[in-house]
Image 1 (cartoon, rainbow, N blue to C red):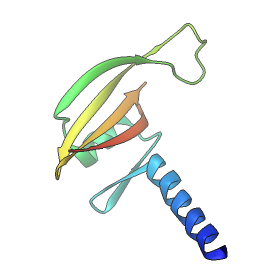
Image 2 (cartoon, rainbow, N blue to C red):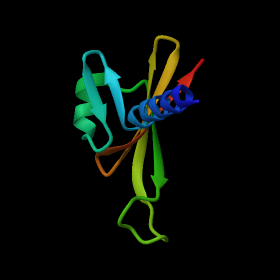
Image 3 (cartoon, one colour):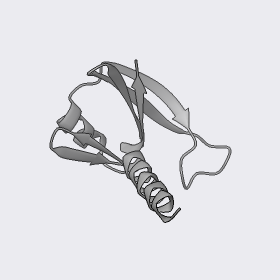
Image 4 (cartoon, rainbow, N blue to C red):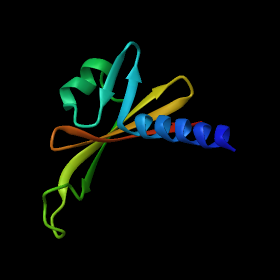
Length: 95
């Protein structure tokens, strides 16, 4: 039973780490990095979509303008959300 608990905790810690960072070659992109850093590591996005999202520090009735940048890599699509010039979210879509 103890082994299963340890395995569960390890898998949970990997999931949390993966949600806040993205490995790009031998570099790491993290939540809060600048849009310039994304382009430095990933290049120009394949698709760029404009979005309006709730952002921390804004009242509930105000939305911050942002973008979702999509990159196609090795049979998957990486979607990076940039709001206010900073990375706020990563999402990997597998084909």
